[in-house]
Structure formats: C-alpha cells, structure tokens
Image: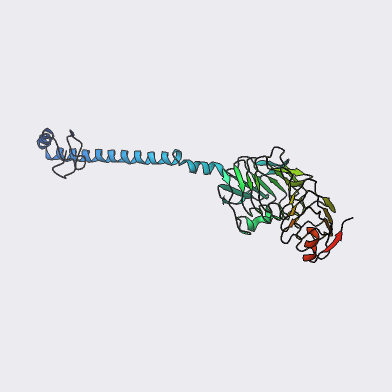
Length: 348
C-alpha cells in the first residue's frame, strides 16, 4: 500500500506507514484525526521508535548471519588449504631417525604442494599432487639450501620437480612419499651429504641425473614390489636389469664389474665417481650412454667388449688424459679410441 504522505510502498493491511507513520487505512486515519495534537505527536514518536527498533533488529540479524558464514561456510578449497598447511605431529621419523620439529623460518607453495622449513633443518612438503619444476638455482628455498638437513614428503605428494633439491649439500636424510610417482631430472643433484635413498614401490619415473653427483651416496634401495626399477649392490637398474641407470658414486671400491646381462650403461651413470680406477663392461652390453664416465678423474682402465656398438657423446669427458680402453682388435671400441685419441690395449 502506497503512503499518501511520503509515497513509499508498504505491506498491505497495516495501519500506519512504516517510513513516516502516516495513517494508511481509512479507519486508522479517522482515528488519528480524532486524537488531540499532543496525542498525535505521542503516536508519531512511538511509531518512529518502533521503526528504529525494527531497523536495529534487521541490522543485527544480517550481521549475525555474515559472522556465521565467515566462521562455518568457508569455501572447501580454503578449508583444505588451512588443513594441509599444518603438519600435525611435532616429531617425524625419517628412515628410523626421529626428527624434532623446530620453529618455522620459511614457507610457501610448490606446484600443488605446500612446504615449510624450520630452524632444525627439516623441510616438510605436503599436499595432494606434484611439486613444481624449476630452473637451476631458482627453487624458493635455494637461498636456505645449506640449512636443509632433512626432507620429509607427506603421503599426498606424487612428484618431485626438476632441480627441486639441487645443491642441498648438507642434506642427510630423505623420506619419500609412499605414493610418489615421479622423481624428475636433477631433483637431488649434488646433494653431497646424502648417503642413502629409498625408492618407493609407486615410483615409475626417475629422471636424468635425479641423484647425480651425490659424492657420498653409497646405497640406492628400491622397494622389491616396484615394477620399474631394482637395486643391485646398491646401484640403480631398470627392473629387467638391462640398463644400469646410476652407480652410487660414494662407494669407495676401486674397481667395478657391471653385472652380466646388462645391455646399456645409461647417460651420466658414473658421472663424477672419485674412486673407480677400473671398470669392466660385460659381453652382454651393446651401448654406453652420453657422459657415462664424465669427470671420473681416477679412472685408468675400461674394458669394453666387442658387443658394444655405440658410445655416446662425451662418454669419457674430462678423464681422457690417463685413460686406457681395453678391448679386441678391429672392434668398435678400438675405432672409438683411435678417433678420440685414447690409448687402446688389446685384451688377452
């Protein structure tokens, strides 16, 4: 019903205008006219007070509804982010070592994951998905990499990014997620204090140089149920044992005979091995990957069988001065040696 005084619409069947107090129904108007001037003023004042009360009630109701929404009706992704950013336990066990959590000194995001670094050197990564890939020297924790002693990947983490933990030279222990699918290129490159790494059952991709140049690495242990990789004497092979992917260069042995049945020596397989003097390649082998023995500065002798018909570029880079290749006459190994100025000795 429209008020004749202020022109505003009101709900039907009310007697007085909600906004100005003017009588709306005829009998209400007559009743108002029959009141004295003082009574009319009193009624108008009462009407204004009632309107003020109603207005305050409405404002209070809206405010309360908004407050409840802020507390309990957050978007699901905000709730998940809040939950996932909290590592609930104050102690974590990494390869039988109990690590006490310290005070958080840095944190952030990495792809689909969150990370926290504390003052005890513990870097925790959690979330549901894979970490981001990075360029060399550009990880968000790179400036603090020498403070990192322990890495703990929670169960939701499915992938470690390219260059993720490169140059974490004081890293002692890593706990990989049981659901980890991928360890990308150079993920742990030059983690010089790392002595052991355990590959979980779920991992189906290990990238180029993922654990390359880790000079104290002596054990690469693969879960027996892994369908893609295996470990032989602490070295990483494909599951069918046809490719030697990585020799644990922290081993102090001076000689190494690659197991019979190995067909390929992978790219960078022995890179920067400081102790090996002699390597024997089996008759089953057919190829040697690029940079396979790069910077093996102690290497003096490599026995290459006639079955090898391919040697990749720079396979013996930075170790040619004192190197001798031992093999059969008129073999691919001999022609390779002659072409690259390497001493060649005929095997007895």
